[in-house]
Each structure stands twice: as C-alpha cells, then as structure tokens.
Image (cartoon, rainbow, N blue to C red; front, side, top):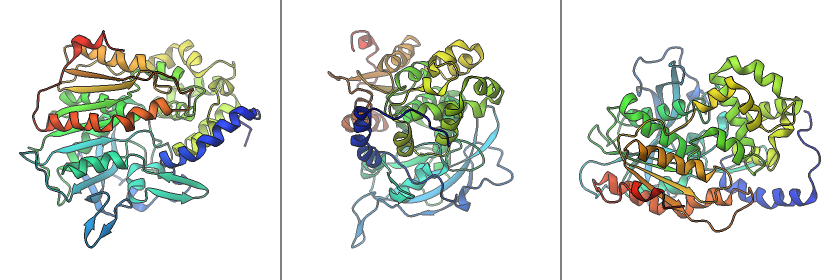
Length: 440
C-alpha cells in the first residue's frame, strides 16, 4: 500500500493520538473485513412495491441489560429487516435495518407513534451497518474498538413508548453495492421506506394510523431533510407529522470545503465513492484527477468504518490525493460534469409538506453552519413550516469535530421534545421563519 501522506509533524500526531480513544468510543467501527452474514445477501428478485418486507428475523440488542426480566437499557424487542426501496437511478434495491418494538406503553394519547431514525455517519464498509452495531454495540475486532453511538438517542424514544425503525441506508450492510453515503435520493428513499416497512413487521404495534416522525443528525440530518422533502411525492402514505434535521450536509460543495483537513477528512472519500457508484460515467474523470495516494485512499475508505477512517486520514488534506495538488472542492468545482452531480445533491429545493426543525452549531467545524442555516432560509422562502434552532458556539474547535458532535448530544433532549410534541399533535413552535434572518 502506498503511503498516503508524509510523516506527520509531532503536533498533529499528538492531536490524533489524543482524539483516537474518544473517536473509538463515539463512532461505530466493527472491522469491515469480517464476513457478511447471509441475512444481508439480497435475493435474486425483489418485490414490486417500495416498503415491502423481504425478510425478517429476531435480533438481540447488544445494548440491552435485563435483570429479573426488566430491561435496564434499550427497552424494546428488535427485529432485523430487509425491505425494498428505490435508488437514485430508479432501480429496485434491497435495504436492511432494524425495527424496535418498545416494551413500554405509549401514554401520549392515540396510537403508538413511530420514529424513522436516520443514523449519523457509520462508514462505508458493510460491517458498519447500524443494524450490526445495535446487535453488538461494543466491538473489539481486528484491533478496532467501536460503539453504536446513536444508542442514547434511540433509547430516549423507546423509553417514551415510541417505536423506532433504523435504516442501514442503501448499500450499507448489503454486499451487492457500495454505500452511496450522501446521495440525497438514496438516503431519503431508504428512510421513508423504513417507515413503510415498520408497519409490516410481525408483532409491530404501529399501524397506518400511527403518527410518524423522522429524526437524524449529521449524515442522518441530511437523510432526514431529504426524506422531509420527498415524502409528499415519494411516500404520501407515510403518516408524517414532523422531521428533525440536525447539522444537515445540505450543500455538498460547502461540506467538501469545511470537512477537508479535519478529523473527518475520510468522509469525503465516502462521498466521492458513493456519488461515483451512482454516476459511473464520472470514473474516467476521477481517475484522471486522483494520484496514486488518492486512489489508494478511496479504495481504503470503501472498506472502512468511521473510526478506522479517523485513524487513517484524520487532519489530512484532500490536496494530497489529487494530481494537481488542488483540494477535492477545487477539482470538483473546475469540472462541470462533476459539479453538476454534486449540485444535484443540494437539499432545500423542495418544500417539505410537514414541519421541520433545523438545528446547527454556529461554529460547526465539519458540516458548515452557513449552508445548514441556508437550508432553513430556502425552506422558509418556499412557505414551509420551519423551526430554526442555532446552537450558539463561542469558540471554534479546530477541526476536531467537537463543535459538530456537541449539539447532537447536548441538544438531543430539546430536539426530541420538539419532535415528540409534534407526534402528540402540538402546533406550538412549528415556525419561526420570521426570525431566521435575525438569528446566527
């Protein structure tokens, strides 16, 4: 394997070493080299309707602790699922995930609600799938320590008696294709079809009358935002009430800039690989503009989970991957065909039919704050009901990701309370578009 960068200066090595332990605890990273279980192999033919259940099986929840029959951690019964969806090119695709039936009762009135939970970045290797880290959330495999870092958010919904369905996204888990990562159509379709298939899981208490919420942060925030835009046309049968979109990468070009040279530089490799998978005609252009180190990096991240990529590529710059020495942003921006594909991923061009909360850290050092705020501005201009919530940050965090991860954790209760109120039918705080221009 070619060296992807020159030896790191001592200061940078110290930063990476100090953050490596934190990253291992926060990011799901079972080894991507492990064998893919048979459940994840798609069948030779797929059903005709989106959201159709292809197969299911009981799944143990590795985060559950049961004493004397009482669950003390994830209070639910999980079912691993495979269902049909449609990819960005209009082709049928098998997607996996997990439905979790709460053991607690819903006391909010009416039928039990459902949340389609869009997880943040897991990686691009098949073993990074959320369904696998929910089964074994603490994994030490082939030298990698991983944790299902979205478990606290899932727990909080289950603890309220709300059912949760988690998609693995298109290509994450199933070995037939690469995970398309930030492709907005792939993400939105997978999230909406997960909500559809949840109603068909044996033993599920949710029905077509159940109010549905969508929740996601970071990659999940982009997936949630895309699903909110697409629901009226793609899945009008989903009884959507509201969506929470935290730190959404709504403008891929802006994120190509803001994430470069940070703790999460590797995610830009996921994005390039994913968009290339759905747009193979770009391969000659990609090959012409990436040097040997870049080609090696893209091949490596395709098999990695997030913590692996942090340890491999933290604080590197994509300019070390290109033949010109220019950044990925500058290269994409200079090639009309590539920029057109990146621009197609822009979220904010379609009016969501239901209320959306957009939350963004004002000094997010990974997913640029201005483009996330612009999403709220764009939706407001279209007449959508948008509740914009800036998480005020007084100091930058130098590309370490702390200002990106922070609001996802610190504002989780606020975000969930807003969404749960919508599931209960509340109309309070559904729109502050008149204030967006005055807020950071």
